[in-house]
Length: 304
Ligand SMILES: C[S@@+](CC[C@H](N)C(=O)[O-])C[C@H]1O[C@@H](n2cnc3c(N)ncnc32)[C@H](O)[C@@H]1O
Ligand code: SF4
Image (tube, rainbow, N blue to C red):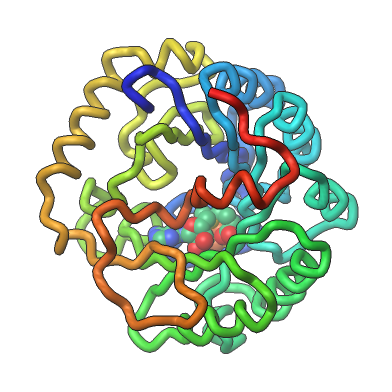
């Protein structure tokens, strides 16, 4: 949500369903989840509306977006509007037809990797995922699909640094790390609050839930500013609730001490370096680095 009502990036949370049930999942996704109230036509309309107000990239996320039967059609729809696509998938199971779609120009992948120890990986995802995700990371690299991998550090001693090193050996060059955000199933003490946000939500980015709610980002789910099933995106973003939430976020981020954000959601350099507090302008690991977009996909960024 920029001051001029334009946006650059949209998370499209197309499903609450997932074959995994990670203990930290902010979206509280799992096998019992579903695609909720947004229909395929609703998603097409939202993509059109997002493109009209400047979105150069959408990210399909969930839950597990690969479980949504309309994912290929929605990817094609976005590409047809000149909008780049990132699919954030756990890469546990990718159908052959999906690999074809993922290999098209203008499409990139993001995934999650937690440990080099299969048991520890399974402790995070609650399923035996390590070998499958690793094999599909290899396949994405083999196909030269632009790939970004997020490593979330959830507990002291987790083999996350080793996971980063292993990803580099697999040929992954874009790796980000994050800490546990206390949102959804990630809440360990207290409840979700502004201190769990990286400081860039709402900054030209918005997220849309499987029910059509618009949030400043996928983490700030307790702050809906409207619903795309009821009103056009442009109307929601120029409305009083968006202005109010934007002001709350700006005030909080401008006044909180740097030490209140002890995380490392930044790309790692070629050689893994010990953790340091991030610079104030660090990016959220859930969203791709816009500087990498233009060169890593076949579509040109949309002109603003
Ligand atoms: C919600 S998942 C959706 C995409 C896909 N199912 C996956 O896991 O890769 C997106 C990313 O958010 C991360 N994530 C989920 N809950 C989180 C939390 N509480 N704190 C930090 N990251 C979280 C996951 O580890 C994953 O990398
Ligand atoms: S983090 Fe991703 S893979 Fe894990 S339960 Fe949530 S949506 Fe599924």
